[in-house]
Structure formats: C-alpha cells, structure tokens
Image (cartoon, rainbow, N blue to C red; front, side):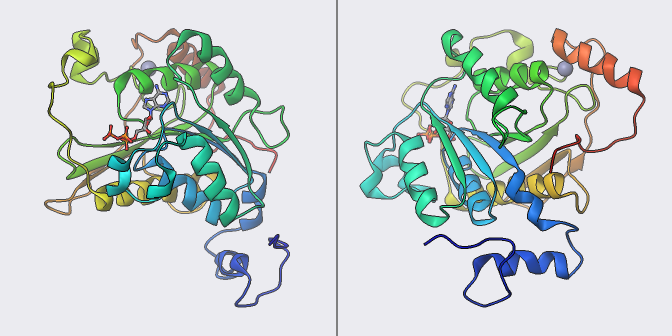
Length: 292
Ligand code: ATP
Ligand code: ZN
C-alpha cells in the first residue's frame, strides 16, 4: 500500500504523522527533507541491516546497499534477516523486506566486494552520483563492515569523492562498540589515526585465529545500529549535537565521547588535499550544502 507521505494528515493510521510530529514539537525544523536524502550503506550484517530498516521506517528518500555475502542460518542471532532468507544474497533479501516495509524508498543494491579493484571504480561512482537525482553525490555513507580492508576502501572512496561517512564497529567479544563521524579534511580520517593493525602493516587475515569464531549479541549490534542512525539523522536533518566518536561499553554502560582531529601528516593523499581545501576555505563547521 503506497502511503501519501509527508503531506499526510495527522491520523493514527499514517506512519509518517508520528515522524512529522518531530517537526510540530520543534525537534526538527524540516522533517520532510528526509525524502530527498540518499544514504549508502556498506555491509548488511548485524548493524547495517538494522540501520537500513531504521532509515526505511524513517521514510528516507534513497538507500544504496552493498554486501558481497549471502544470508546464513548462523546470522539468526542478529536482527532483521529470517530463516527463510538463508541462501539469498543479503542485498536482495534486504531489498525485498525493505520494499515491503516502505515502498516509497528508492532502493539500489550491489553484491560485490568494495575492496576489489574492478569494483572500486563503480563503488566510487555510486558515491559521486548516487543522490536521489542520479547526478549528485550521496549525502552520507554508513560503514557497517567487520574488517579493516573494507573500512580502508570506504575511507579512500569518501576522501576522493569528498563525502561524509559514519563508521561503526562491534568488538569480537560482543560487549563493546563505537560509532565515528568522518568529514574529509575536517575530522580524522581512518588513516589519520591508524589502529595498531594498520600501523604495523600486517595482513589482517594473519591476525584471525583459525577456528575461533567471534561472539555476537543482537543487543550490542542493535544498540550500535541505533546510535549510528540517530547520529545520521542528526546530521541529515540538522538537529542536536553530532557525535564524532562515541563508544559503548556494555559491561559498564559507559559511553566515552571525543572529537578526533585530522593528522596533517596523514598517509592518505586525498585526506591531505581535503585538509588543505578546508583550511583554505576557513569556513565554519557546517553540514554539506544539499539540494534538500
Ligand atoms: P560473521 O562474520 O560474524 O559470521 P557477518 O559476516 O554477517 O557475520 P557482521 O559484522 O554482522 O558480520 O556484518 C558485516 C557485513 O559486512 C557482512 O554482511 C559482510 O558480508 C559485509 N562486508 C564485509 N566486508 C565487505 C566488503 N569488502 N564488501 C562488501 N561487503 C562486505
Ligand atoms: Zn587522514
């Protein structure tokens, strides 16, 4: 059933009326601009699939979904996917479910490895031209992957295309997580402050212990997805205080919060270029101008 979105009257049966109440209550100035927003999500695992569902239920204009994997029964300890999805590509199963929840959202899905050389150019093109009009850049990228190689590829693409992104992670023991906001040239990029692994130059695969599987909890992943999408909505709809780094420790219910500044000697040339441009402009902190 297609629902006439944002213009709809306030009735209990209209899902958009509760979202528009945010505007009437003064939390958000123009909630309806979410219909013109395009978000690209890499990784449809425990965090990314839930983030995609939240944005779909918020009435986002367009979602571009990337994942190279298929749904497995082993994924059922997370939210979103169901046993009947087992064996299907995550992108296809996700698109079918999201479409049934909210057919107003424009969906695009790609099943490939974003780190692979032949696909990286296509990935970069979708960042640059994946906006709702098919010409402008996406407004935001959400990184919901579980490895450094993929995060490094996303960092590279966002620095090159000058697109804002938010990164998320859940620890191997499933009891802590974090989100981070990265504005090329304005905040630390993923290579400005390399995690020990990247700084050591070691292959990530050599660090994985054979036969030892990581723990995972739907609670931690759901909480991290909620923190990520809440921060994304603040950025996209311009309300509240954005978090630049927000940690979550489940054992102590501690949420450390910091801002990470860019490193002028960052090893990523596109990061250094974006820093130069940003210094040259001397602009005040503000969200990227959008056509919304
Ligand atoms: P697990 O590894 O614990 O069995 P998972 O692979 O679903 O489960 P999550 O952390 O829940 O792990 O999700 C991460 C998601 O990111 C996965 O769906 C994975 O396929 C996807 N992903 C990781 N790297 C890439 C990549 N380079 N390109 C595309 N998708 C990726
Ligand atoms: Zn950098």
